[in-house]
Amino acid sequence: AQSVTQPDIHITVSEGASLELRCNYSYGATPYLFWYVQSPGQGLQLLLKYFSGDTLVQGIKGFEAEFKRSQSSFNLRKPSVHWSDAAEYFCAVGGRNAGNMLTFGGGTRLMVKP
Amino acid sequence: NAGVTQTPKFRVLKTGQSMTLLCAQDMNHEYMYWYRQDPGMGLRLIHYSVGEGTTAKGEVPDGYNVSRLKKQNFLLGLESAAPSQTSVYFCATASRAAERGGRYEQFFGPGTRLTVL
Image (cartoon, rainbow over all chains, first blue to last red; front, side, top):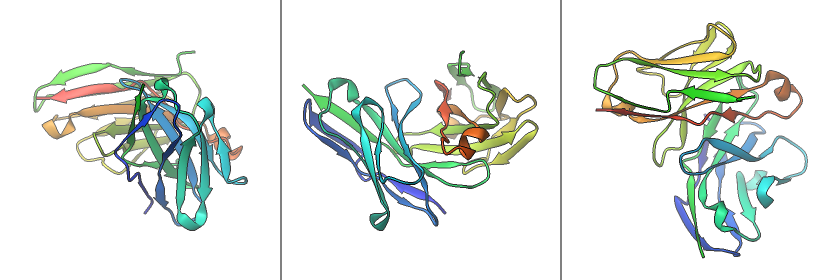
């Protein structure tokens, strides 16, 4: 069965500092990997995704993530955080299953200090 | 284009009452999903549909039923609501063609906040 672990429930960083959110997954084959962001009271917006090829993936809003098969990880990074990045971030794993169901991690809530 | 819409946005029910949540999409997507979101647990799949007239169980289907009579609508029903069903419910859609092209992505609605007293 597929699963996703986001070890950090809350993270606080200062505006302008770098950010790394951790994601570890369990999946039997080459996974599809996603990062979504959810602002308070909103739905989920896709930040970036990995299907195959280059293991460093660029997304929207200056985010990137690196797929490391040996570590079963897909960590999200941003070199300089803005106050508007405060939100909850979800990592998800899926694959070539019927209906392409996704399994989500528990989420990491990011707070940004001025 | 409205994308994915959900009706209602908020609802309060008493234990034992029934209700139906509506998800509507104008993106012509084949796949539709219902999730529930609870603190610290991320999103968990309740039911999903790979096309009109078909539905399947997800991770947490108990206490819920679904129907997909039209391609653009996916209904989630609670026949006898329980306090454990207090949650935020999200609908999502995805395109089969995008999957084949390596551009698979689920698009989410704004959510329905349900409280069962």
